[in-house]
Image 1 (tube, rainbow, N blue to C red):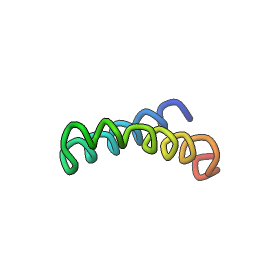
Image 2: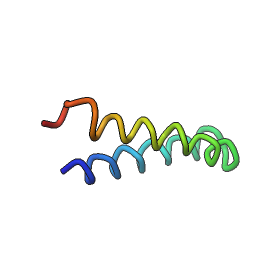
Image 3: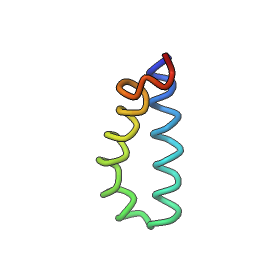
Length: 48
């Protein structure tokens, strides 16, 4: 279940970043997006 949540959050945030920030800033924003997605899926305990 955590993997599914991770990929959903990562995809949604990545698409928002790409469309709102442009391609290069979207690529730069990928590292914080990975961290936020990991935290939401594995550390936040929202989905347990």
